[in-house]
Image 1 (cartoon, one colour):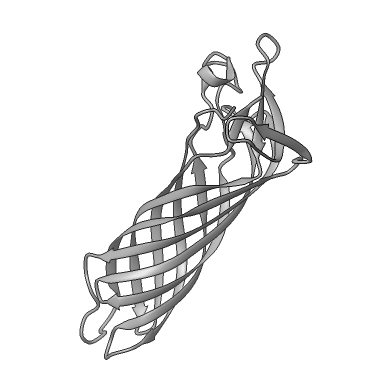
Image 2 (tube, helix red, strand yellow; image 1 turned 60 degrees about the vertical axis):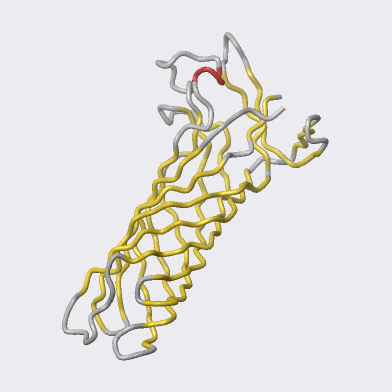
Length: 220
């Protein structure tokens, strides 16, 4: 049986963008690599785990930390662009006070196609640093591959089986067993960012965004 769960990514990223000019001072293609920090909301709360708020493992989430990724973008116009946005992080599954790792490592991959709606466009002639803010809306997938997944979970509702990593909450009074599935999930993205254009074909990109998806957590 799959439990209801939720997880949001709040990720500021810093990207280096190499742009090839197509007309006088604009560009059509860009490529960037980035690193940033990820924070995760709880996928299981105290009602799910059977623990009180003050207990360290009352809520279960991935530990916050570093992520890396790459982007390839195409700009239809100075104010509208499309990008392929990929990222990777390796995070343990932990309790609310981060004093207990339920799963020691989880490979978290994500990929999305994002539309960028720019609030400003480059000047006709580049004369100095420009700040070009934008709104990003995307849709894609999240892949979750936990360590210690040499177990098999059977979902009797969906009639499917898959590799999973089990963990137990509620100890010692009300033990509850869960399985974190090696599966993917539909993912949405919304973010705000800005390109800090430092040259005709060079810019720094900063962005903060939410990735919204449902981790594949099952009650055993």
